[in-house]
Length: 260
Image 1: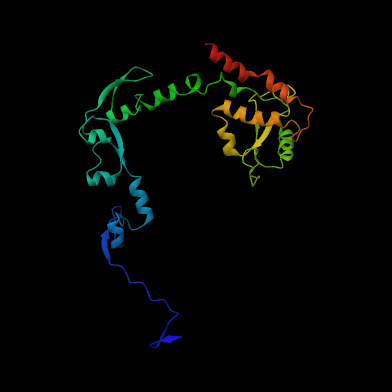
Image 2 (image 1 turned 90 degrees about the horizontal axis):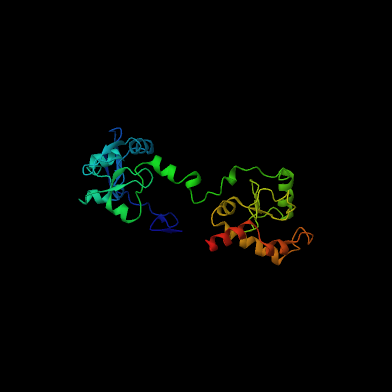
């Protein structure tokens, strides 16, 4: 179909936006940048490579107010913004002196970050030493360095995955390329040697990582489901309800906390 001698099916071409020549901040080469990109704060580099090289070419400079060293990009230095290490220093708020929680050394910290409960340590070394090993709130007496039962092998893991049809016990996601992890419900590495072969379930990697924190919640969640369904997958030969009612090491730990 033609209208006024033109094909009506052909879409009209979009109007070209105005472009201006600008020098690249990295190599200095002139290139065409669209006006819309310039208004949005873009159009500073002739290519992605130049943009990457420019942003990763920063250097450590000292704060003009507190003297603390920080990393500043060359773009910030050119615009005159790379002079202060934090917003509080930029607003003219003087930093405060506070002792390091770990080594006791006095250092300068911004007031805004201190009000948020941050900047407790004078360096990354002190922070790492204060939050790792026995000083960590997740420390369990070095249980992660213990050895698993010799029966907890590949063959046993495959039996658990096959029994649950290779799906995650929590979300039901089937295995794709990677096999699901086999999780200890009671967090005991010698469960098989103690005759508790039922205390294992397959979990996808995200849910298995989630069980490392708030362990009491995950233990109660899984053990309650097993106690209400003693015939699931492995039959009723394992006295799950008796094990649950007698309590385990986690029940004892919780009682000890209450008596303290």
